[in-house]
Structures are given as structure tokens and as C-alpha cells.
Amino acid sequence: MSSAARVVSGMRPTGALHLGHYHGVLKTWLALQQDHDCLFFVADWHALTDGSGAVREEAVYDMVVDWLAAGIDPQRATLFIQSRMAEHAELFTLLAMVTPLSWLERVPGFREIADQHPSFGRLGYPLLQAADILAYKAELVPVGQDQAAHLELCRELARRFNHLAGRTVFPEPQAVLSDAPRLPGLDGRKMSKGFANTIGMREDAESTRAKLLRMPTDPQRVHRHDCGEPTRCPVWPLHQAVSPQAQQEQLAADCRAARTGCVDCKQALLDHLLPQQATWRERAEQHLAEPKQVHWLVEVGTERARALARKTLREVRDCLGLATP
Image (cartoon, rainbow, N blue to C red; front, side, top):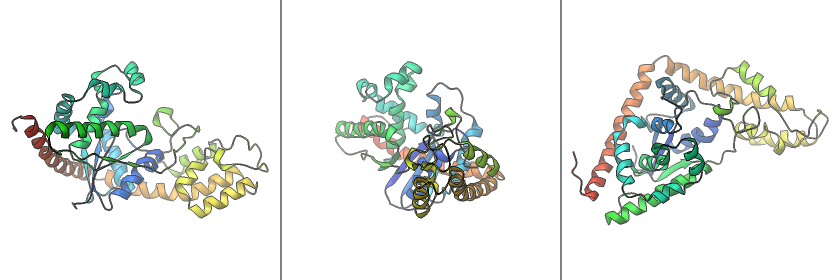
């Protein structure tokens, strides 16, 4: 690996991914892996904090296959599983000793979440995130706007520990914000498995076409001859994510002038989306045919991550006067 800035990011294992995952997260990862030292992990401990039950191994590896299908390169990035890393849990425990309770309580959304899932794990969720990041002395962390406050807590913890240690142990990680538009699902709300409104990365062409043709469009455009407004249309952010800029400009102009209808607009989107999905399916099928190879890639990544995390824990233990086993 190069000496480039280190990046750490994780995703909860929800199984096969959808277009929202790709455009919201994976495209950022793909860009960063080109010239950064990237560690991408399956956040299976975090998946337990919502009280939904046990994590399925199938969901873990389905997600990793989609990472690989999207173009994540295990020769450039380190892929690993969070729960295989006892060092994360140890650092979480040690950071908990120096973290004021009030810092966790002020994280946005804490009260609502605590009322729904009142567990210590849920309270400590942002602290475990900080341990995930600081264990590797990450300098950059890809996050959405909704996670920015969690990263600020991580930065505060780094400063606090460095102050108590009397030296700089942890860098203060900086956010890498995605510039992708919020991708709408089939009902116009945010694309989410929880809303059952997704289009899968590996969904077949027939299903994708049927779903997209049912999507609502500009509510003020009732007939084809009515002038439309792309910014009111739930389909438009998909064009912004998938279609070339020149075609977006032409489609927007034609929509506003009523020169094209909604079905035509959706077909133009499918012309770009379906080939991309076909590529992902082809790559995924190659990995699904050799599951032991996928497991081996994750095993190799987990061992590299463990070596890095152990080095950090030795330094943290030394600062706290704890013996290193």
C-alpha cells in the first residue's frame, strides 16, 4: 500500500445493494481507492444496534460481492469484517473511559433512537464508530450529511485523548462528503429497503424496466402535451446520477417545452442504466461462482487491518499505562 492519506469507511450488511448504495457510497469509494490507502469494512456490529436480530452471513458476502461487482479492487483497498476485529471493541472500551456521557447524548437523533432501542449498544453507537476510525488513524472518512455530527464526535475524542496523552496519537479525521443527489425510490421517498422502493444493482432488465415505468413523475404534468419541470420529478435525480450531462440538458429542455413525454424520458434513462446493471451482474456472477475466493479476499484484508489496529492499540495502551499482551 502507498503512503497516501488513509481512508476508512463501512457499510451495514443489508445483503445485495441497490442504486442508492452505489451512487451514495460506492462511487465515492471507487474514486478514493485510486490514490488513497483505503480500508472498507462490513459493519456487522453496527447492524446489531437497531435491535433487529442476528446478522446473516449470506447478507455479509452478498454485500461484498456487490462491492467487487461495482469495481472495488482488493489489490487497492483493504476489505474486512468489523466483528472479526477485537481491537475495535478494545478501543471502544478504552475510549469509553474518557468520553463524557453528555457528548453521546447530544448527538443528533439520540433521544429518538434511545426511545426506540434503549440499549447501551445504541447509546454507544457513535463511540464505536469513532473506534472504527481511530483504530487505523484514518485521515479521511466518507460520510453523508446525516453522519457529519458523528464524525465531529470522533474528532473531539481524538483531541481529548491526545490532550490526556500529552502527545498526538490520533489525527483528526476529515469528512469526505458525497456530491451525489439523494436518490429517490420507486415511490419518490429516499431509496431504502425499509420502504421496499428499491432498484437493485443486480436487478434483471425486465424487473428494472417494469419498476421504472411505474415510477411517479412530475405531479403537475398530467398529459404528454403539458410542460413539465424536471426538478419536480422523482425520476430526475436518477438521470442526474446515471445519464451524461449533455443528455440531461437536452431532456430537461424537451420536458419543459413538452417536446417529449415521461415514458420517453424513462426510456432514455434505461438506455444508460440497463447496460451498467448488466456489467455488475456479469462481474458478480464470476465472484458468486467462486465463494471461497471472496472469503479469502476478506480474510487477507482482515489480517492486514488487524496488524494496523494492533499497532494503534499498543500505542494507546502505552499512553494509559496498560501492559501490552
